[in-house]
Image (cartoon, rainbow, N blue to C red; front, side, top):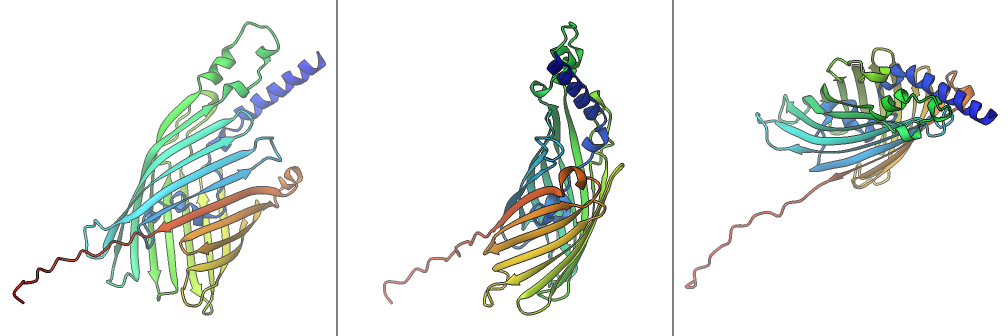
Length: 341
């Protein structure tokens, strides 16, 4: 009997937390190293690279100290620059991204499929000044696995199953529209500066059952610099600032890259980075590039008041991307030799 009462109290506690986590579910989850998921940062980055295809993604695990399951996020993307354009020094970027967020013990799941388009045009033939504009459109689905929920009616034969029905029938689908712009200034072949702005979740969020909203509008500013210090050392300071209705995320970061190959620049590199999410966590980042394959890991050390509950263990994030170049064989016109020669 005591165990049943204990389980009932726990059930009420879970429901109370769930109903009061509306603002949390209305926000986007943190991403530490956007190097491995650029389309999440700004749609204008779609197809903004040298190569034929770029494929990558991230896996993030956080919050296990607060709840057994915590939060798990998987992001995957594929994009490509396309030569079709409306100007001499311009091109189009196209891509797709898929993601899945699983939050807490319930669990509360958000899945999304989004298509991306961007238009890039340079102000000069050397592409020293490039302006980009991008847009994303897709569908998001939110649902709850009611088989993982334990309610009062499971222990007390009250004959009322309304709460169970509400959880079982909870499934919300809505469209998502995001836009972004980007300006990149190239000083020379080694150094450049970029500045971007994006707006995510343009449709105004609407309330639905269980008081869970669609994501709030998110405004993101980001800027970075790539600077070659020596022949083999590169630094990349960057700042990312995101703001929504009930949350903000400000992250100054700096990465240092070391080129392992003098002959082939930017082919084999290792890097280490340090950052700080304001009022939340210290960010550690490490990674390497081998030819066109780039792999990295990031770890958040919680320094906010939440550290007393999670023992400073923040999120662990693993990212990877690969740029694929497809070399086309040149078309050679056959030469017919005259038999009399």
